Amino acid sequence: MSAVAGAGLGAAIGRSLWRRSGLVTFLLLLPPMLWLGVVYTGSLFALLAQSLFALDEFSGVILYEPTLSTWRQFLSEPSNLDIVLRTLVMAACVTIACAVVAFPIAYLMARYAQGRWKALLYVLVMLPLWSSYLVKVYAWKLILAKEGAITWIFGQMGLPWLLDGILAIPLIGGPSLSVSYLGMFLVFTYLWVPFMILPVEAALERVPRRLLEASGDLGAPPGMTFRKIILPLAFPGVVAGSIFTFSLTMGDYILPYVIGSSRLFIGQVVYLQQGTAGNVPLAAAFSVVPIVVMAIYLAVARRLGAFDAL
Amino acid sequence: MTEAVRFEEVVRSFGRVRALDGVSFSVADGEFFSMLGPSGSGKTTCLRLIAGFDRPTSGDVFIAGKRCADTPPWERDVNTVFQDYALFPHMTVVENVTYGLMVRGVDQRARLDKAEAMLASVALGGFGDRRPAALSGGQRQRVALARALVLEPRVLLLDEPLGALDLKLRQQMQGELKALQRRVGITFIYVTHDQGEALAMSDRIAVFSHGRIEQIGSPRDIYDRPRTSFVADFVGAANVLPGSVLGSRHPVAIRPERLRLGEGELQFDATVAARHFLGAGTRLEAQLADGTAIAALLAETDPERLPAEGAVIRLGADRASFLELAH
Image 1 (cartoon, each protein chain N blue to C red):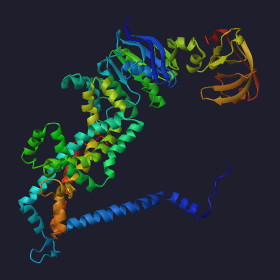
Image 2: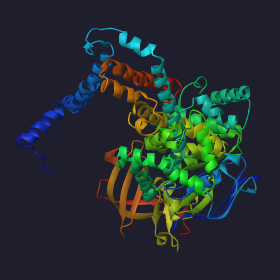
Image 3: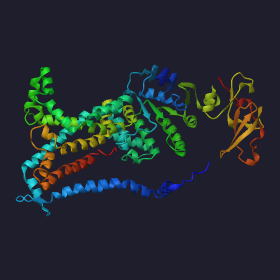
Image 4: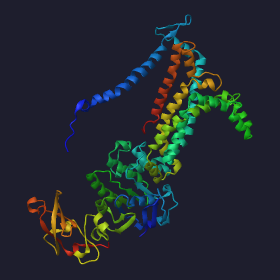
């Protein structure tokens, strides 16, 4: 057998790249680095920098001079803090609900489903992601409406008093599910739960069966194995999923318009301020909030050891 | 003599495949019992049945005289050292070793004292705060051992625990394991595919092939009196020859190290096919007149004094060196 002597330009390029493997890495990384570094991070910082400018109240023109007056305006208005608090509580509740709903499904997918069943479960989890967000939200508005499917089901089961009782709870209730925080919470949870299932499933999949056997072998009944081995090892997956569910809820600006009482959420304010009101600096100040919250959240998660088992 | 483990006609099928095909044996208390066989011969399946990770399709498994088909792993007085150690990656060495004690509700002070003593006895004192990922293979292996032994089980199951270690460390650990077993007096059931390991450590060996036990006996029994050609060939190398050379109806085996050049009560002509220098000796591969391959292990290493390839030689041995096989 003779060595294949490469001829032509392609072979020459191949050889010279093989000798300079650093160059290949550089060329491969260049497009994503340009995208992430310049286009994405750059525009993000450009937006955030806007919060250091201010809108001239009188003329409605943005004054491009560094000032903290926008931040002063943001922090001095109690309703702004209400908006932030409301959004964070909703995001936290949705994240917890997603984790609780996702864990058993992810566990089933990772530990018990095999072959075709596993593929089917994947499709079922992802199926909602294939249809339009708007269609789903409006469909839920109808389902949750006073004349909608849920009211009808409670009626058929002879439990309309139960639904009325739930809606009568102050704060989370309302005239109907579609105009209450509870309805909003249900739809958020529905929308984002696949983003929790997938990372948790991946984390559970990586827990070797051997470790569960070892735990049982050392005398731990299944409940103990779950608490001491499975849960801690799957926790990074829950944290990864919660980053999705938390930030998606924090940034959403459409759902609060369609479902819920008309009280504002952060995403809506950003949308309103930079659009209708033309106050880009204030919109930028609001945009800083989710970023800071996520940074604190990740730091706390790291402290708690969520990433130790990665 | 009390009994630690007994198998009675145990069958374990996976679909149409019979991983265990009617296996019976018993292990005495305090014994070092090895299950030896090639991969897929059913030895690990046996271990999993004792640990309780798996249940027999038919037949009975007894631990300390009690049937245990319905006893889950966490209620069995048996602990396992896994092949890949299965240490908990999110816990420190001490947390790994105290896990079983914590599960049993032993208070923290006593837990730590026992773990410290156990870690010291496997030469890992002072390593308690490390994570398994920060340990070498040999150290992990000893943590796995300490984690299982600290519970003082009736039976310790070891699933190829030395398989992942390099040769020097493996030989050193063989000696340490054997000494440890003597010291603690716990029954060891040891799964391995390495015949040298099994011969060096065991009180008795069960040789597995295709889901059955070919032979059970002491290392000397297995090596010097193999009953079948499989055992003769798997435990140490052996040349299996037709019975006609001894005037027997059954095949016979001769160990390569027992063959000598031009000596012995029985001799045959052979043609040298290849010579392999092994360092401590030379392995000679040759062919008998009827084409049967035969190997001889000679102490001679000087190429000048060894027969050349293609040369016709006489290989021989005393009658007593030939092993008569059942089949």
